[in-house]
View 1: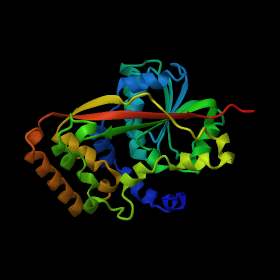
View 2: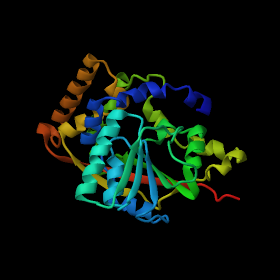
View 3: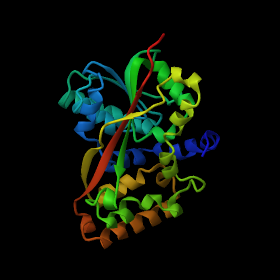
View 4: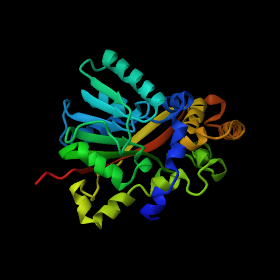
Length: 298
């Protein structure tokens, strides 16, 4: 898939699924968190408690929360286009400042990957957790580079669920539960499901490798943590439904189709003995961390 096809996708249409209070609540309730070990790895890339960190597309602070508590970062700016997500993000960070990290200085700002409301060369690290597929394009790379300090870091984080030989801890019956939202009949973006965007997220870096003019923005050779980080998450039926309803394209379904999705998901949960009756069960995620840097200025 070439960059032109990616740019023609109606990403903004799907992204409107995040612009509701209901979706924000479902995201906070159901989506997985991130392990402390991945934050320790990121901090070990040359960052300190006082580094200036931007969480881009922060959502309702799922990853920001771990940055502030486990990472102990004191200067965090969240950039998020959804007002409902920003409101939740601010609540979460206010609570963290009171209960966990009194030294936390934070801002929650409206913005996009192509329009970050910060000064040039002002940021030590930009994190993007489970969101890079929304803006994997050179325009975003250029804007990210603008606000990063020389040698500043872009970190891309993913929570991945694997089955079979890749992760035998996850029983195969879970696929019909936690991946039901991928079923084509529930995906309003029929021409290119969001899943495929996730598979193509590296394309912009591959394109940069073939265009030396772009190397002034970021090193196109992504580095990866030596291994993924185990991220087991205890959940239940209610949280699983909330997580699925927080998917942008599921959030956008008409009420009757959304109810059809909920009914089928509930049935799948009841059909598997480990997930029936709203029992708690564990989903074994792997958290993967990729990173690159802005070159030093000549």
